[in-house]
Length: 366
Image: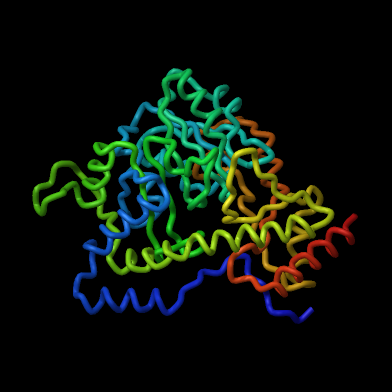
């Protein structure tokens, strides 16, 4: 069928972002400067209850430097989900610590507190849940486990800008939380990350680590990295932050339309007390998910994404941390999940085509 493809994700960049970049270019201050500082403060005020925020060059850099700033290193274990993007476990491994994989709740796709507790050993120092697809993890259950075992809690909030649990924003639960600003996220700075910190000492160490180990020029205190955000990227991010609330409401409205009209597939469930921001709208297709993907694209022009087809503990890069490990819910999700378009650029016609396509393919496979 010759239809224009409805993409699974679409960054929205407009004239305001272009004007912001031009403003920075005209200023002559292109590297980390006043735009970054303003972006950090605005992000803190609007999304994480005023926690100190530190802007960095990418989400992965934010996780890596956040872990280092929190003192994670060789000999430590950090419990993480396997059902997520590899950056979560990569960042742990890059510190010299060991990622320990635990299974997920099959409803929310986030870390299961019971599975986390079973994974704790004498070397475990922290747990780092991912608020996957924009749905908050069970922070109440996870913090209870952490408190029982004396563990610290960190948050991978890469996909969850503006999500809340019992009225508390994600990013305000752990010692630090990382938000990705990659182009396909709910808001972008072009590339970048933001780290929200619960205490000023972690924030200070983050600022040192992102800037070659110095707060004052040439006064290097630690061995650090170049993980700064530029003022160009921050200027884009500031505009996008101002548009995030409206975009989130559109995502939620799009998701509600899909909830109400899809048939023959398992639609997302939102936990009690949770606000889902639908970075992804993820369904389950128990039989022949990959054939479902092909039929949607070729017969209905509906693009999709599979996040994630290979669990982290099965990846060649990370399998050494999990020899013989079985995570049944993670494995099942990797076989069945399929993310449909839900982004704010969708038209009503697009949404209706997504519904018609999914329902037709589901019915044909029944």
